[in-house]
Length: 404
Image (cartoon, rainbow, N blue to C red; front, side, top):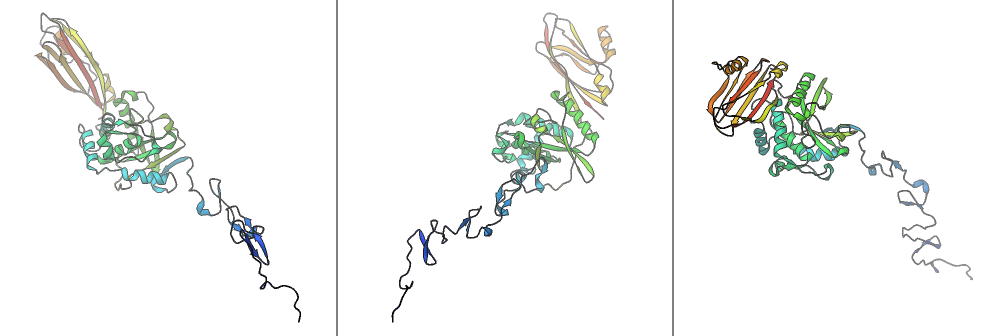
């Protein structure tokens, strides 16, 4: 018997790397994926198949990027607008909520002590006077230390109190915590476009409260006398809620902030995650308007002479009543001084007996607090009783008014 042909079993095909056996021949498998390079197809996502139709379908993400698994799309970014981050999970709200929410600490002992110190001159129910006290306390007790908004999380308020320094975000969470510690409500507003953060404080749900607040700001802060004041509002439960900008790091008085922040296209807000109370507006009644400086000078009064000063009562016409604070200090010898009305002034000039509200003879200094509900003038009379030497006298008069 004669056999013809060949047998693979007897003569097997041997393929040396990077070749592989395919059928009865060798093919190139340069990437060692057990596919002949001539038969494989590389898909857009980098996977390799033998049939182009087996490639995964591309997914077009919201930001325009292309992926092949929807789970690989970057998180959706929020567009222009104002966003309350407590109710959202998109970036940057996810970071802002995690970074700021725990930093509202109104029950912290150090925060409460600072708040009590700030409002010491206006104890009692939560009021507009107390808000100004806290704002002024922050400006005088905590100096600004610049750290950009997007470089770090804010410190806890008690850390800022210990160092007595902080940037905008650190002052913001401290201010918000102090306001809540005295019974108010404050959120922190973040404006990445201008790299800034500041508190906003709830003022009330009516324009009367808002206007009274603006009037008090203009009276209390000289730089705000002719300024445009700003607030934020939104509707909730059928009511319009008014929130006052309360920025100590970017302004010198409440109601304003950095110009670039006022017109930003995108803003974010975080409120205290642990706040369980209701919105509490500050008490407007009893609000102080002022103090205004009326006199702050030094007079030289010759031996045996007198000095007379009329204080007009015109400010009272805009308020229910006003309180005058008069301080007289001799830098030389004793003096006589009196605060009186027009009749007392005329009688004094005529060398007649006269009546006066307060005063003293042969004294080094004196103070007088006088409440008035009339526009009639008051008069300050200072006499140098020394017949041989002149007197140098410091005079200070301020007036604070009240709407009721």
